[in-house]
Length: 362
Ligand SMILES: NC(=O)C1=CN([C@@H]2O[C@H](COP(=O)(O)OP(=O)(O)OC[C@H]3O[C@@H](n4cnc5c(N)ncnc54)[C@H](O)[C@@H]3O)[C@@H](O)[C@H]2O)C=CC1
Ligand SMILES: O=C([O-])CC(=O)C(=O)O
Image 1: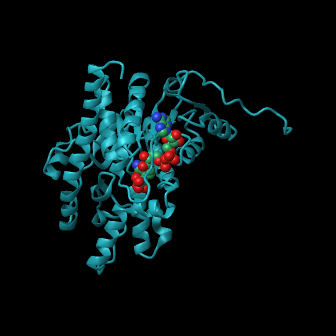
Image 2: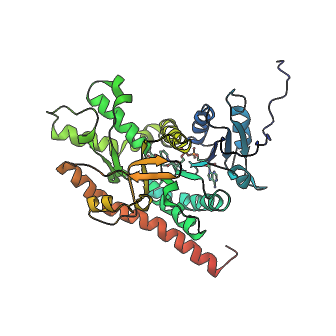
């Protein structure tokens, strides 16, 4: 083709939706995570439509990706003129990496002030346009942003806890890598599976090293064990520090987000027995999460554990299994922080709606 041939127009439109199609949508698609994640999704042959939304640059990102010879039709839209609505129409899964990342010295909770509003607005769009879509929340602080999405869906009368997921895959990816390093077998990293439960920040990240597919050396010192747990819990800080003001993990997050998205798509397509870690409502479990609540010794509304996925979302939340005394202590430390984080998200939405009712112009 001559150099002067016109590029595929970024204004391409979608074919009409059918059950054989999978439409994946990325909100925040022009960002540090959004772009590589969109690239990975573009490589997935099961995806037939890829919708990209951001407040900047999505037409360019979409035009770029649209030249890749894979089945999906890519469309990128910006806010005015119903861009969000167009992108969300017919969505099967919506991944949300929209929002600000950390800088050195910040905690994930410091992002709440800005990201809570962004996530609430995007969740409102999804609840209105694509209420049946599976929603995968990456934006931090995940422990609070997932409850925000749930509260918005409740308000719109479309809440299905089986379809809303906090993406905690990066914690498992890190744990696998770090354990393989400790074992001196970095090449084994892809085969190492370490369950990581709880939430997605600091002490709420609880690695169950006793359940790793690859056992730690039996003579590992208490200090080395504690250092490994801490590295998994605070792995995000390593990247924030190394990027030195330029943001947080983007590439490893895109890898992890794609890994989770792929599992969701395979489950949507009817594959049975797909298991993935995710931060979900305990109500997503058919038994209402009672077994997990009993293990935790408390009623917690959201918790990350291995979940089994099916065509309608969460089929079952796995129990935690046998924990060592050290792991029980880690869980105990995670619970109060999770409770606070969940309450922060729920209260934010309640207050916003209360303010909107008092002043409908808001
Ligand atoms: N769950 C996890 O494991 C991880 C979560 N994160 C979080 O993901 C989020 C995104 O991180 P990065 O991609 O590095 O940030 P970034 O700043 O590079 O990209 C964020 C994108 O969101 C867009 N955006 C902002 N407001 C928006 C709106 N209302 N609608 C649509 N798009 C909007 C921005 O324009 C930007 O392109 C952060 O909150 C970060 O903390 C990051 C790493 C891991
Ligand atoms: O550390 C951050 O702020 C980003 C993140 O969630 C992670 O890398 O796990």
